[in-house]
Amino acid sequence: MTKVTAQMSISLDGFYAGPEHTDTATNWIDSAEAAGFFRVTRWAVDAAAWRERQGFAGGEQTTDSDIIAETFAAAGAYVMGRRMADGGEVPWGEVPPFRAPVFVVTHRPRPVLHRGGGTSFTYVTDGVASAVAQAKAQAGGKDVQVAGGGSLVRQALALGLVDELELHIAPVLLGDGMRLLGPDLGLGDKEGIELTPIRVIATDGLTHIRYRIEGKRPLVLDNRGRDEGPAVVAVAGS
Amino acid sequence: MTKVTAQMSISLDGFYAGPEHTDTATNWIDSAEAAGFFRVTRWAVDAAAWRERQGFAGGEQTTDSDIIAETFAAAGAYVMGRRMADGGEVPWGEVPPFRAPVFVVTHRPRPVLHRGGGTSFTYVTDGVASAVAQAKAQAGGKDVQVAGGGSLVRQALALGLVDELELHIAPVLLGDGMRLLGPDLGLGDKEGIELTPIRVIATDGLTHIRYRIEGKRPLVLDNRGRDEGPAVVAVAGS
Image (cartoon, rainbow over all chains, first blue to last red; front, side, top):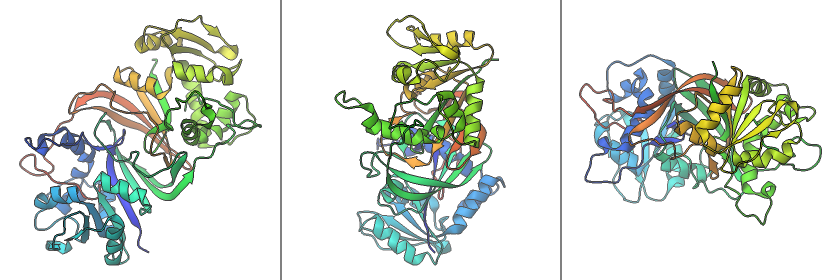
């Protein structure tokens, strides 16, 4: 059965890029946003499986590379945010790395863009849920991957559309930047989204954690270990 | 040699508690802050080693419990924020769980508070670095642990005082609350704090990652895998 998955590289403090580049007088490549993005995705660039998909030679045959290969292989279709699709359109070139239909969530109607190697970009103007539904229909039983950016992943999580979330945690604190997970998850007071880790892989620097998303649940007070009703006990060493 | 360590339980989205309780007309225990705090620390409350230190019966003998026991055993002295110390003073009772000297960073001078079982609270009014130095002198060669709260951990990280950071990542998204790691780490533009994971333990739900802190480093652009250099290539599937 088709699962909807999302995966992002983030810093330990939760950023997938540095502070957003908004100054149109300067190049994105020179921005703090790019510097942060390149730092948290460096592990992928070094990996043979990522390089092969980009048409680059070389790279390292590592567990990190295996994870990337597995992720690409699992995808039958993608859902992507408009900003990521725009940013990638030129550099991905005539044969983008996806080799599958990509559904881009946007406000601007545009004809389908057909590229080589099996990649197409379909521009969906009626929202994330519609893009996910269209991707499911085209995924051929494989996964629908919410490819990013972070804003789209958050929207998909808030709408309860994601079955599995995998984070690739890079060993760095950026301090500031574009956060993957923030207050716009649509959670009420004393409510959380419960997860179950289903795979944890520690490689040379990265920690890859895959979670099954259980859904929104109330945050229930327990009795903090006492026999009688809630008592305030701070937790030392934890 | 005495190391300075810090450890905190956080949600996957980086919160160690819900949104800060500031309404003095209501009880902290009923607050969203507490609900979030209890959710991310629940694993500790269930653990035999935590319960033993709090004087509670029972609990589970698990790897989580072993990690707590190891953390308590490694501590020769603690550094603690004022808010955590105030919040714990009554519930920790006459025999607090620390069994070691605790140095509380505060603006209010106060005589040393001696408690049973080897715990004392010394109130340090000249800053975090001074508290850490005093704790080192009393740690008997064991670790100095920055016990929390999050604000103190951040300050100690920003000052470069912490050698190792261990995060206990609870499988929940809180969406909002008190963040452990934020923009006040004192980092410059295109600068990060580099880390090396030295231990990753996945238990039933929790992921415990211990990092050695390497220090502040510039975020250097690489060439994104091309022969010539920097080109913008978005990273798919990562």
